[in-house]
Image (cartoon, rainbow, N blue to C red; front, side, top):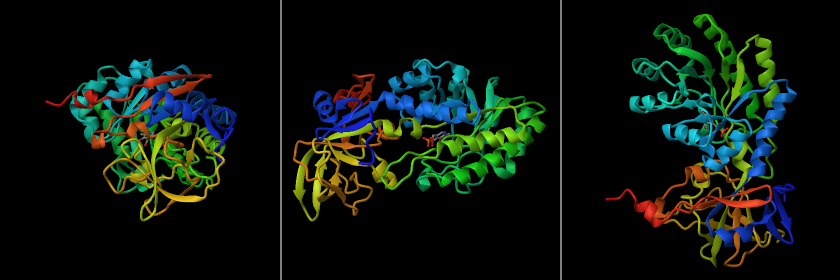
Amino acid sequence: MWWILKGHLEAKGNQLYIGGFSAAALAKQYGTPLFVYNGNRILDNFNRIKDAFAAAGAAPRIHFAMKACPHLEVLRLLQREGALIDAVSPNEVRIALRAGFSKEKILFTGTSISSSELSEIAEPGVAINIDSFSQMRRLHALGFRGKCSIRWNPGMGAGGHSHTITAGKFIKFGVPEQKVEQAFEEAKNLGLNVVGLHQHIGSGWTGKDVDVFLETVGKTIAVAKKAEEILGGKLQFVDFGGGPGIRYRKDQAEFPLQRYAKGIVEKMRASGLKAEIAIEPGRYIVGDSAMLLCEINTVEEKNIPIIGVNAGFNDLIRPAFYGSYHEMVVCENVNGLRTGDFMVAGDLCESGDVLNENRETLRELPVPEEGNTLAILNAGAYGFSMASNYNSRCLPACVMVLNGKTRLIRERQSLEDILRNEK
Ligand SMILES: Cc1ncc(COP(=O)(O)O)c(C=O)c1O
C-alpha cells in the first residue's frame, strides 16, 4: 500500500488509521460523509516547503492558497506556523482576517472582479494583485492607495487538467505578454503603488511540469527587471504562484520540491533582483492531509458490480469534474485482496456521479460488506472547498486530528441551513 505513511495513514489490525485514530471509529462518532484532516500532516507539508527553500538559501513568503481548503481551523494552524494568504474573493479575505491573519499577510488575486467588490477589498487595506487593465483603472478610480502587484500571463502553462492550466492563449487570467510593459507604464502614470509582479501558470503539476514552470520563472524575472526600470524603483516581491502537485496514484512520483525551490532561488539570485520570492501553494499543503469517509450502503451486481456510498460529487467533485483519480480504502479491510472490480457510485441523481476517475474504469477493491466505511484519500485540496448543496444535500461535517486529539472543525449542515435564505 503505497500511501501508508507512519504517523499519518496506517493499517493496524486490518483497520485504516489517520493520525493515530481509527477511520471507521471516527465515521461512527461523527457520522458520514465526513472529511477528516490530519493537522500534523498539514504542518509537515508546509514545513517541507520551507525547508526546501532554506536548503537553497531562501526564505520565501509562503501564501497558502486558501481556495484549496478554507476552514478557519486550517487557516489558524497555518497562521501560527508563519504562512501568509492568497485570497481570491472578498469573503476569503474576510475569513483570513477572522482566522487571525493581519492585512499585511494577505494578497488578493481576483479575476473579473466588480468595482463594488474591489472597494470591499480595498477597505481592509490588503494588497491587490491586478488582473487586467480594466481592474487597474477601476482601482485608480476608487482612489486605491494600498500596495498592488500585476499578474501577467507568461504565455505557457501547466496543470493536471485543462481546467487547471492558468496561463497560455485561451486563458482569462492576467495581462498578456505583449501588454505587460504597457501595464507597468500605465500603473506608474496612474500613481498606483506597484510593489510586485505575479504569475500563476496552473495547478496540480507533476515533476515533468517543473521544467515548463522554470522556463516561466526565467520569463517572469526578465519582466520584473523591466518593471523596475519602468517604475524607477525596486519591486518588493516576485510571486510565482502555486501549482506543486501531490501523489494521487501509485505510479506517480513525489513532487520534486528541491528541484522546484532550487530552480527559483538560483534564477532569482543570478538575476540580481533583490525582491523577495513569494509562492502560493494550496494543494501541496493540504491535499494529502485529508480523507473523505462515507458509508458503503449498497453492494450489488447491476450490469456491472456497484458499490453505492452516501457521498457524491456534491462532496468531492474532482473525479466527475476533472476525471481525477482518488485512492480508495475499505476501512475495515485494509489488507484485503482487491478481488472485485466496482463502480463506486455516489448518492446523487446523475449518471456522472461516480467516484472512480471515470464511469468505465472500474476500481479494484476487496469485496466490502454493506455498512463498511470507504475512505477516499487525498481529499484535502479542492474537496470540501468545492462541495455544493446539489440534490439539496447538506455539506458534510469536518474533523481535525491534531497531536493525538480529534475535534469537530465544521458541523454538518442542516436542512435549516439550506433553507435559511429561501422565501
Ligand atoms: C492565483 C492562484 N494562486 C495559487 C493557486 C494554488 O494552486 P495549487 O493549489 O495548485 O498550489 C491557485 C489555484 O489555482 C491560484 O489560482
